[in-house]
Image 1 (cartoon, rainbow, N blue to C red):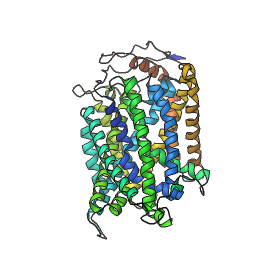
Image 2 (cartoon, one colour):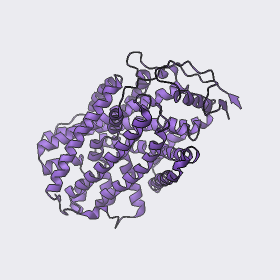
Image 3 (cartoon, rainbow, N blue to C red):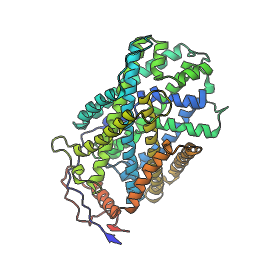
Image 4 (tube, one colour):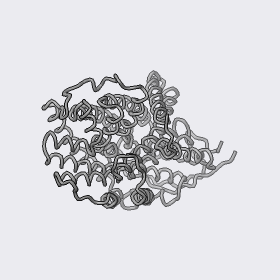
Length: 505
């Protein structure tokens, strides 16, 4: 048994200058409703045919079960580390680090993926703008990704209150456009390729249980990032009230939206074989339907909202990853420069620069190598789907840890709510089932579940093998969750007060 001192750098807490809508803006920015609804239904349609709306109903149920855990835990614990703090305060320091590592890896992967989506959707917009041109002008996707990268790098190091306002504005525009399209599809009775209103889309008949559960990962991907506002626990006014409200608002609002939009898209393309094929092979499903039901001008608007939604997801993901890296470094689990806030903007600029460096390298290597290849025929879209799916699976590992932490919290600390333990139990069961049916039958060693597993294995090895990790995390969380806002904190001497022991066991 050894005792380690926490070597975290002195720090100043971020300003509490965000309201509930600012927290919702970050979660919506990473969820990216326009991006999700433009690009996440195609693979589901290819897998389960007309049952796409059913898959999103199941996804909404699963996300609601997971959101319950975040809701209950953020009523008690709020910090910049999201699951890092929530799991650390309920299960223990090593589990907290492992969960936070998974969340951080997820947002880096999402940021990498979203630059691919920016490149793909820019070319889709250009192709739409050129009408029936058989060989439309296109740009190498890395150029569009670079433009998004540079603008994002500038914005994310500015006042973060303005960033979340930008995210909220972007996604509000996209939601309005989707709502208009849904109304028109319903008014015209759907069925561009035949089928009309068909509520059999909510019927699992003809689909195996394993096929349905394997497809649910695409639905989970659509909601991935709803919990991002939990990383704003030190920047949001009255976080014990506003963070849970933001989580609830994001999940409920997007659940209703996604189910209705996916139903509209399915009947809009048509529920017969021709319609399902058109849906599953569409580069941007919303833009294609906008062209069919309203006209080219609306299709261009939808195409553009998909571009800015992908950019918003990149902006929110990279910003959140930087905050998680900052939270680690602040507790002595990374280089000290990453633990400091910029004196003027009160943003973790050096941690953000480190995150942006990783994103730039991976996206550039993906472009020059032409990998990964998953068969969409669009290199940028291949990059998006591959890295986003890997990120969704690392995120589900962290979600599973939050579910376990919620069980412990309810049984140990919230006995008056102990009956609610059924929700995290069901949520954990659903996560495990989705994992199982996605790993089952995989033979490619670089398949998404295996890469996600390898990334999380690295985090597990660090959590188990890093000397003094439990002590550093324990001291850091005790300090960060108890000290008042704005107080300049010295580096811990290694004997902090709080629920964690300082000795390494």
